[in-house]
Every structure is written in structure tokens, then in C-alpha cells.
Length: 472
Picture 1 (cartoon, helix red, strand yellow):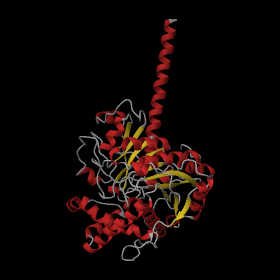
Picture 2 (cartoon, rainbow, N blue to C red):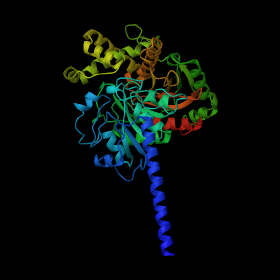
Picture 3 (spheres, helix red, strand yellow):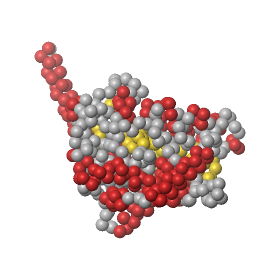
Picture 4 (cartoon, one colour):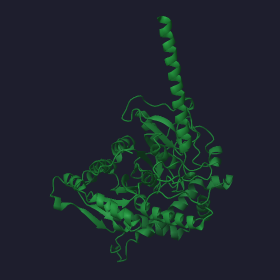
């Protein structure tokens, strides 16, 4: 009997080993298909990198992927470019970036660093050197994930991570969240530390994050946000002011997106959330309104129109960003002359040419006027509602096709115009996977006053619940 028992145990052990090996191969295959991880590190390599992390905490057991411009102890940071990896990024990080440390200290399990657009200066998610991470939510092969936090979004939407850290300068978390059907957040500028993060444009750069559900997105915010920089007074008013659909932003998107989002926001559930936030006001008091974000009727002290149309705000962003990018990377580019992919190569050439002082002064002043305008607009706890993208994820770019390049330019211009208000005014933004067009996700973006991130995340969680958003 003991001999038979030993034989049975041996067969069970061999069977378990085969199943385990098959599962490991399947996991490796899934990672390879997704093309979202840098070098696809295995558990042993991660352990040798001394990533560390706690066994308990608010993020216990959640798999976290980290964008490859964020320091993880024991690993190099290539920021999406091979020359950067072999020069500035050639040595392994001696310490975690604060954002990575906080997440690991709360029990998250590190599963790898993720691909990104070169130096984070693109919104497409296509990398000339490493390829394009897979968008699992596209209804056809070859749909882009959006960038520059492409690999982080891809890891979550391919179920290779539960949460992910990215960066957002003008939409590099918000746009991939929309394209990949995820929840995403860009914080108030300065409320999440950026030490250990490769800079792009310091006055716009933020650390953002992705999750599969609104609750986890909120908890991540609680972990990452600096509580000492919270605007407690305005936070208490969030949801008690207006829910304002920014009509000039919605004018930039496909009509089907406008129609579907308005239908979602007009539901009885959304009205209930709004009414509860106002302390039980009557349904007639529901405050969903249309609002011109760049109200050209607003004038400054001299009687001039204070703000140009929203479509021109991205030029202010572009001018300031271009100068800051060259400040971040100009010396390195001059010394090493790295190879960049299409689009990014052209932007660095413009950055090298420089911006004249008068133009820079004009756009810095305009930035402050926009910031003051939105700060006043949101002081009563109002929430601005914008599309997170013009429509579903487009197909990968064919650089030999004039039609494809034209569509790329149109999509980029729309994305810059939609992303500029939050970036220029340093506002917190949350993206919900609110609708689908032909089976593909499009996100709704919520924005509130600086320092109200926690309250905005909590409101977004309630909103996601009442409109019936499911975990992807």
C-alpha cells in the first residue's frame, strides 16, 4: 500500500510540475504578445534587483507595473530610448523613486518595468525602437494603446498587472486610459513626488496611475498623494457646485462620443450622486450645465479678451514645454546625438532651435491667466467634464501614407487641445471608461480645483458605481 501511495504522490507531483511549467510558458507567451514589459524580467531577475516591498498594506498582493522612466532599485531606466539606456541610464538605480517606494511599501508586488514613448514625448504609444505595446481593448489588431505611458496601460488592460505607474505631462496617462478602457489619474501638479523620475517638462510633469476599477484608483491616490498639500476647504465642496460639460472641448470629438457621454451623464443615477453631494437638494436642482471653458466674453482689467479659444491653449503648452524639454535633455542630445523615431525627432529639432524671449514671456503670462480663470471657476467645488479622447483608439501609424500621417496630426492636435487645460492650470484629472463606440472604449475626464484630488477620486468612484461601469 505504501508503495502504491508513493507512486500516486509521484504522479501527482509530476502532474503539478507539468501544469506549473505550462502556466509559466503561457504567462511568458502573454507577456511576449503584449510587448509591454522592458526585457520581460522573470521573478529571479526581479528578486536579484532588490526591489523589495512589504507583505501587507493597502495594496497587498496587487501586481504593479512601473513605467521605464521611474527609478526602481536595482534596475536601469531607459526612458524608451536605447542611447539613453546606455548613457544616463547605464547604472542600476540605487533607490526607488518615492512613488514606487510608496506603492511597494503598501504591499504591491512588482512585475516589471514598462515600455514607453521615447523620453515620454509622444501621445501615440508607438516606439520606433521597441515596438508598440498591445491594446487588448481594440476591436482589431494594431490599435494603438496611446502614450507615452503605453506599456503601463497595456500591462493592466492585458491583465499582466492590476495597477501601474505612469507619467502625465499633457495626457500620457489620460489618453492611454481612454484608449485601453482603464481608470486613470493625473494629480495636481506637485502633489506626488517626482524624484527618481526622468524629467520631460518640469512645470507640467506629474506621476499618474492606472487601475481596473475606481476604488483601487482612489486607494492608489491615498497612497501617493501628499496630504499636506490638500485644499481641504474646496475639497469639502466637490460635487456641490456645477457638473459642467465643456462644450468647446466636446466640439473637438466625434458626434457619437458627445451623444453617448451626454446620455450617460443625464441618467437618474448621476442625478442622485449630485443631489446627495448637495445635501439632498431636489432633482430640479441638478446642475449638469454646458460651459465654454475658454469663455471669450471674459475680459481682463484693460478690457481685452482674457483668453483665446481652447484650441489655442495647446500652443501655450507647446511653447513652454519645448523650452523646458531642451533644458532637460539638450546637453545629452548635443553630446550623444541619439536616434529618435519619426515625430519625436522633429520635436527635438524644434526644441534645439529654441524659443525667443518675447514669445516665452507672452505664453507664460497667458498660462497664468488661464490658471487664474480656472481656479476661480472651480472655487465652488464645480467639476469640469471633458472627453478624454476624440474617439476610440486609432490604428497604428503608417509613416509611408500621407492619409495616415494626416490622421495622426489631426488626432494629436485634438489630444493636445483636450489635455492642455488640466496641464496648463496644474489641475487634478480622473478618467473613467464611461462609454463604448462600436465596442471600443472612450473615457470621460473629470477635472477639479488644485489640491482636491482625493475628493475628486471619491466622487469619480461614486459616479462609476451609479452609471454601472464594470471592472474590465
